Image 1 (spheres, each protein chain N blue to C red):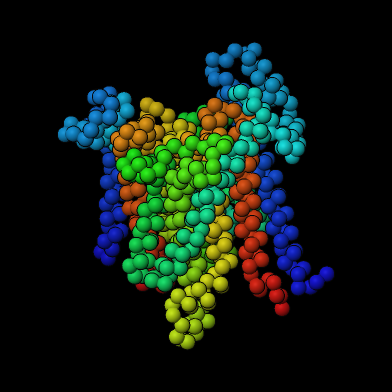
Image 2: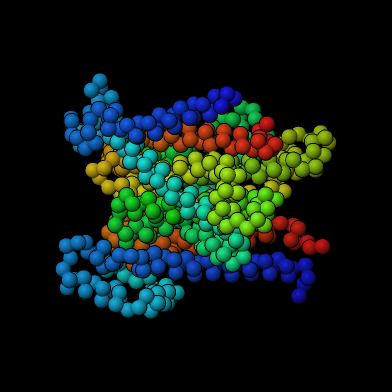
Length: 272
Length: 322
């Protein structure tokens, strides 16, 4: 930790700040999530630091509550996509043969349709609720995690210690979780950061299209949707989520870069 | 058969067959996704307040009483004959409604691609030429920023700056018959610019990586030692050898444009396929969603297939087998 570069430090600080404000939204948000406290689109002032939105709700509070929803949905989706993708990827790498073929070809098929299009097709017949959104996003995204974890695990599965574990008769689950997982963790953690950002962008896009988080619940994509009419009159309320999403994405990126560099230098690779 | 041609032809036939197989599987997936998922399509279209009679009528109209396989085969046969069915909401013929919108979408995507592809490759080459110096860092930082913001927000930022503050471009991309080509280009200028920014980052970074990869070869070092200027080294020696990965990058990003276009069309209220799809997802108009999903999947799979085919053709090792 002592040799942590400045960029990663800044990234970590911002990421932590976003997560803390999401967790303690109820404590730090000056007003309630759907509380109407003023006129529509009031300018920035001491009482409303970021002004008010299209129907007079405090925008700073909306942003904090929205961050909670966005970060929660994105985190849950990431966890699901990782548990599913990594487990299947490891199983495919360890078992090989027809299991690997079946899983890999299914994933190829899933990736042959863009994730957003698949999500729209599925959401056209499913009720749009938070659990459904999380499952849809997590399952669609697990294809990418599958590819990575299968590649990483295939390299590890031929190591001597895995062979030794096999020969002493360990069960498949032991080999996957006690032999392969600890050694595959670092590249997966770095990837996790990128998948998380992708999830944030994904849920924001769906909400913006009106097919994600439903009002009156706040979320960053929804705030853009609610306030987009103001832009034509020169009211920048809809652009505030851009700042939040971009800073969160860049800071998570910086942390993920650092994790990746650190682990590749452990292996004696680049980044010394 | 000419022995020099056959391996390439074999590879190409394989790729095209694989693409068609994928497309067929995608059609199954789209059908399964909308018809066989838990939940009743008729119920979700009509909502909770529907009476049993209207539900039964809609099921009959959608053919939900038939077994799924029969429905799928019927749908597939229709699609193959160019009949995409009728929209539930207004009874319009989908193929007809879609034709013009598809044209509009392709026009927008083409306008974006014509700008983005040469620009991304040029920037990638410049970044390699000045790698780890300020031009490289500036290009990398700016492109990192553009890929960290979702497409729709990029759209609104540009609207705010370019059409509200400076009044340079129209904020809505209204397009209709009888507009001159120049007017049409002017109308799509902002959405095209957004799409350019969206794909530019990925395309430039991947181009840079592909050329850097080649820059480590022995022949590039030889060229440098001969005393050629850095740009000549890149243009004459590195780039031709990186052309196959670069083409792949370009194609992948054009395929990515297909997705970006959905969101951007909604931002600019552009009468294209994306707007059509999103509108009908909200209205739960399943036949339209199926048709749009299939068209998007076909374009996406087609571009990926084209990427494979071109990189096979661009690889001289395959053209002149030993």
